Amino acid sequence: MQPQHSTVLMVADAPERIENVRQAMDCSRGAIELLWGTFELRVCNCLADATKLLEGRLYDVVLLDPTLGVRDGVDSLDSLLIASPHSAVVVLVSEHEDGAALDALRRGAQDYLMLEEIHGRMLSRTLRGAIERKSTELRIAESRAELIWRLAKAAEYRDNETGNHVIRVGCYAREIGIAMGLDRKEIETLFLAAPLHDIGKISIPDAILQKPGPLDAEEMRTMQQHCVIGAKILGDSAEAEQFPYTRRVVSSGCLGQYDDPVRTVAQRIAMSHHERWDGTGYPGRLTGDQIPLEARIVAICDVFDALLSPRPYKEAFTLEMSLDIVREGRGTHFDPAVFDAFERSLPALIEIRDDLKDVRNHEREKELLHGAHSS
Ligand SMILES: [Fe+2]
Ligand SMILES: [Fe+2]
Image 1: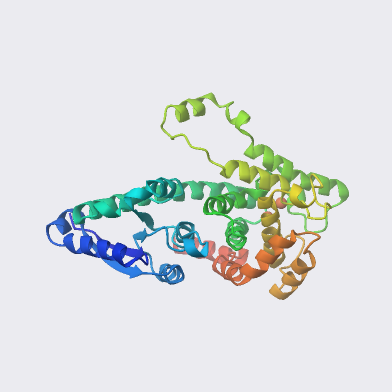
Image 2: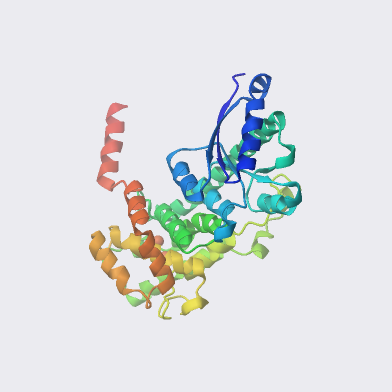
């Protein structure tokens, strides 16, 4: 088997901690290399530089001194977990900081290293184990995200079979969540839950969903039902318990037991993404903080993307026109704090919009036609 080569970014500013790791790395050359592979170490002693480095390159491991940034009130662990979701984060702690080690594991670090015990073999084994655990975790997370996206796209397929609207809404919501200072778990949950906002459209008749003109009052009432139906599809735990087989599999330990907030957040979003800050929305005519924060975030993402996209009843608006309309909604349609975070995130949102463009129908038809001719 080929020894693996792995990249490690150490983020620490205490010289003795850096020296400890450097020495252990030097010891890990030679015989240990054959067992555990090689490690390339880069040291960075400031959080801002680390974030920049992580933007430019994927590191297998981020080795973090979690006390970095504490003086400035910055949570360095959370910042790095967000900046580098694909790296295994390992924290460096001292013997008297074992509370910090447990806290870091609970919050998403893969492992910890006791500074007083660091030596080459242990260092390389810990790093290799962390990389393996992270890659398993990523595989599970990716397959879960893919299932959620496919489910969300199943509803979107009814009226826009080539669109990426639901995926874009998830990506925008993530950016706004970051700009609002939500914690990493909340941001991840929002990212996964937001694409399911229109899942209830699965139950709306084609004649309404694809109607080219404006809806009459009765059709509008039916269309508005998609919120309540979506929330019902995403259900509550009491409903899940009606599936005895599923419950048996889960409780046998095959799927593990953990508290997953994605479904409950998705349910809140499905129910309330058409509520408006001033209480004129639907279905509950909720106002202000009565509307769950996640739904307030998705509301602005959904409107922004819908304005930029063609719909059966309208052409796509330009970016300028769309932004004018969204800006008019500050404090009436949209929560002012969410709107301000939207403004701060705008460059990232525009980039997402460009990266995840819809494949228009005529292009798709050309592709299909080309496929049919060449087969
Ligand atoms: Fe909707
Ligand atoms: Fe939508």
